[in-house]
Length: 378
Image 1 (tube, helix red, strand yellow):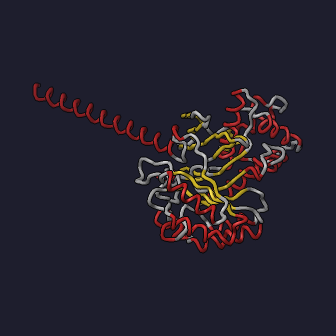
Image 2 (tube, rainbow, N blue to C red):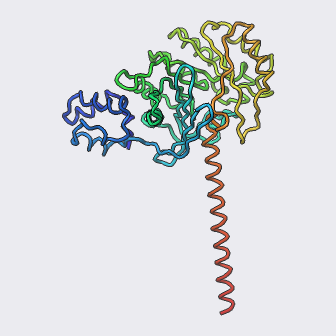
Image 3 (cartoon, rainbow, N blue to C red):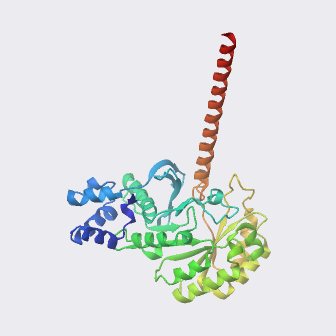
């Protein structure tokens, strides 16, 4: 069953029309979902049972079950959710001076395979449906409601597990649902979608007519370095990627954010900084660089760049008139980097299963040994 959150307002209106119901009922249901943040159909008190019953039979309310909630000292909160097929996804709530943001997951696993990333440790199993992405926002909003501070999700970053543009249609539907004036009404300019560099999809995104922000996970200024840590660069090298970015800028006149994870001895030398400055020189007014201190992952050999190297890298970019910032870290002590909590959970679950299997084998061996001794005695 799909989630009720998978329906756009137009989808819901059409579903109701097929059952002889008036369009205003769709507006009422959306009010319950996105303005009152109800957690069940039963809370929709002004919707007749003749509508709610078939709706509940066809659409599950929320597809998420909470497995783990971790909260850091800076209030960053990471949620590990289980889906109907027992797959695990992560969602992160972060507090900023400009508002409250939520980072959502778009796929179970990831096929992009960036060597430094925890998300790519488990290959892609499937795409998330639009409703499974929307449900992450709604769960976090109800979490905020329960805190009783009147806080609301104001910003969304589509940067969790998976490559958003590899799940393009569901992500676009998600964006339109959360951006709808009759829904959560989160402004398009408060939403950022990140891509590792799927050039054809960047071109398609440029034609969507959305004001949603684009972020590109660059992480290296040349093909040799980028291909060594991001296999997507072998399919869409920097030249092709930047052709698509130029088309995006030309069509939208919008700024592009470049994410750059600082990895010790890999992409953090002064030469790398100079190459990055040269690469961005033609688009200085519409380029912005986020330098991100790397969060080490147990399964990967990479380490965070030294503070002095990050500072030197930043200075070189600034001297070359590149707008940049060193990203403030959120929730480091709770492993809030993308994919870390799920990886940790899966390791523990795998170890637990292996331990249980060994115990079962040991017990079976003892039973067989006892049976053999009994047979010899008899």
